[in-house]
Length: 132
Image 1 (cartoon, one colour):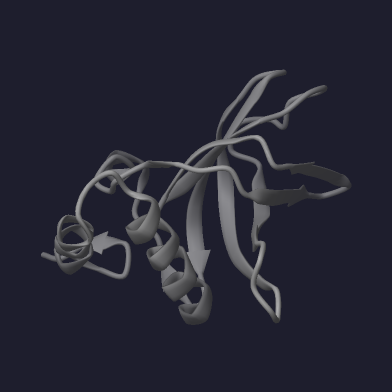
Image 2: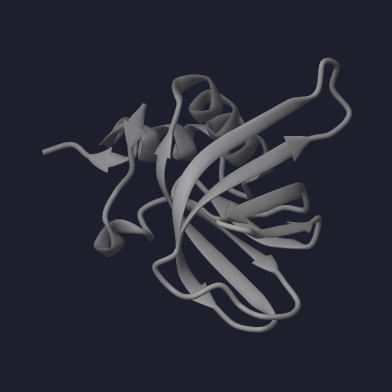
């Protein structure tokens, strides 16, 4: 399991505008949507409706990759960083190695930057934490 960066480092990675199926689970609440705003190596922003989850709520996030067989899901543990009745932003805290590889590829292949630029960002970090 890779530990993710702290709050002060949440903008060190490229954000990609992407629409994917995502499920956020926290206690008895489950949010399912394909209306995502963006995704990075450290978090996801998505549209939501209804009662917002409180900021700092621990949650589990699954991103589902469509059009592949067998279906792939990318699973992360996170914390709600921003929440309104219309938008939810989750900061990733942990991701297993297999999901990390899928997440990295999602960001690389959907970025407006070159794959080399994204690889350099990743090379400057150990997992998701900045190298000392």
